[in-house]
Image (cartoon, rainbow, N blue to C red):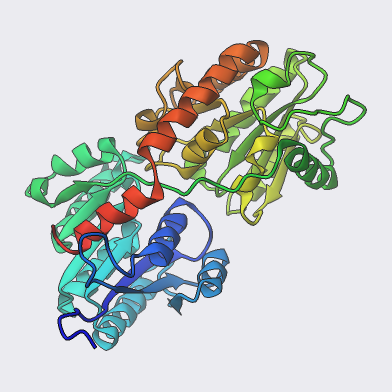
Length: 414
């Protein structure tokens, strides 16, 4: 045995829910990819443990990779005085029992509860990741004041705070006494294992048909395998298939994308819109679809396992969010070489260069979404160049290896 070898360090991740959103994807990627032997530090090894509320896709995926998990039902997203108090003491007890070297908390509410519990349990290193500051949401003045104070308190309780976008990094640095606690680490991913375009499009079409939305029926077969709109839109014989991947949450603001689809339909553009993801806003969106008479144009497919592998099915991707950190779907769309229309929130503008590698728009502007998508539909060569340029950028700047290496540096305080 090598007596100089350091003992395994335990990293305990805490996140609110076990669904499959961007923050959960972030925790999963870190938990399963922590280095056994970190480059330049071959003596370092890590053990991951993930704590969350409830059960869901994250729990299943972690189990498949052999990562130990702990479920605490009382650490949900919504505020509940008695539930939050119970969850706090559960976390405190867990930290004392597990004795982790690092507690890494994610999301706003559990970030504060977890950081306080970790301090009281005397955890040596506490890291908080901001996946978009909640005080940038549209709320009343009193709510924003309370949320901003609690966000500041979380940063103060943590030894280091990771921002996944430059915008959040600067917002954090502007907090009192927070300048030296903020660290910028962009999200990164492995190149997805995409299905070929024909297979992906057929899969999405089959699922959509079950929801009453028919895609490409009685149209010529599409022989393109690239997924790039510029190679298969010239004959206008296919439906203009728009995709979105993400949790059905109010921050995704899908209702504005639905209004944009309605506007395109009024212009006789053969538009179909498919959303891959489940969540609490489903009923509201179903009502909006009926209100706009889009039952034959829009399909809510629910949660789809490994959804990014089907990205090449689409002619364009839309992100209508009013709040984001650094959204994975934009990076994934880039790897797929797809044109994307996205609101300029969080770190989106750090990935997309407007009118060079995609189209950036303001939030809550359905007419702007519609105009941008119409430009992509009517200008296939321009759309192709968007996808090519975005692909080059994400391959260069948003790798999983870079994210893991920089995050480990935060754990080691170097």
